[in-house]
Length: 172
Image (spheres, rainbow, N blue to C red):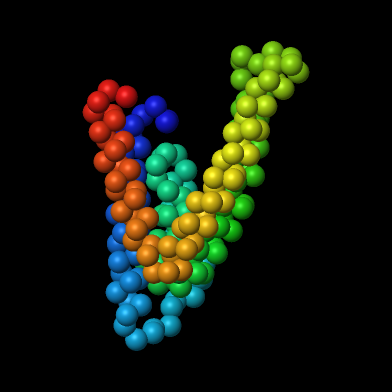
């Protein structure tokens, strides 16, 4: 999927627009008198879960950005939406990791325990690096969300979509 920039660019653009709209609406409402937010009931949680499910097959469609923004657009407090989004990731990530590990084990090119060990080592190093990068990114996103600058992440996604579309057009 990563080799299909023609899919990644629009997914980034969709994520950017969703985040931008929710961020701008939240910013507009934060200057208005405080109104009670809606509770995170089963209906809103289900909607956020559906959006998360749509994000999984599309690289570039930010799972956390889309789920937090969906919660905000559904009237859920931004901090509750953030907490719920990250709770969904805690549930989802181990299952995806196990699935990918099993897929790696079943891959035809792995022969014996030496092949399996050599296949897992780069994956473990990559997972550790991705974990550290993810922690930094989450801290950055949380600061933007908490400071009322969530829309900046939407702008970032739109700029990234343009860059990816340019790379695709250039033949990459």
